[in-house]
Amino acid sequence: MPVWPRPMRRAHRIFPSASCAATPGPTCRSKGNVLTWGVAGAQKEAVMGARNSIVTVEEIVEDLNAPPNSVILPGWVVSAVCK
Image 1 (cartoon, rainbow, N blue to C red):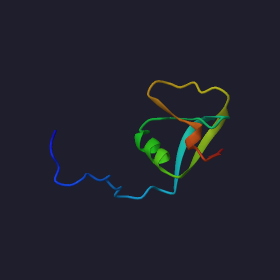
Image 2 (cartoon, one colour):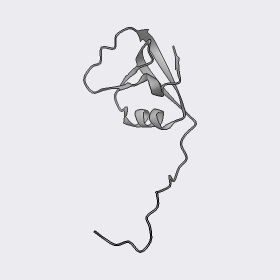
Image 3 (cartoon, rainbow, N blue to C red):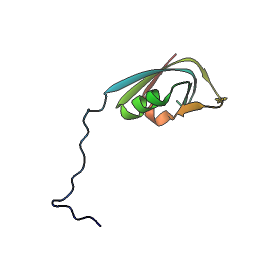
Image 4 (cartoon, one colour):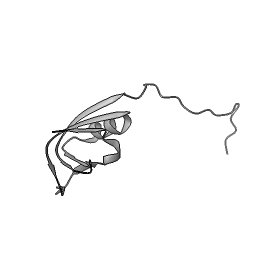
């Protein structure tokens, strides 16, 4: 085990978290789960890191038929859905 000259401290974030993130999505369930695909890595990280999130969707459906390489944003990270 390496010996450190002083106690280690928690790293601080360089950038503060965003207060709100907005992202588009084609479909959403009535429970708030949103289906996205394409380059969704940055969108998912923005929504997960923001305090509030707004998602615009084309339609609200009862069942998400998720194609391969799709990302589903869980309902607990979505603050509002706009159709």
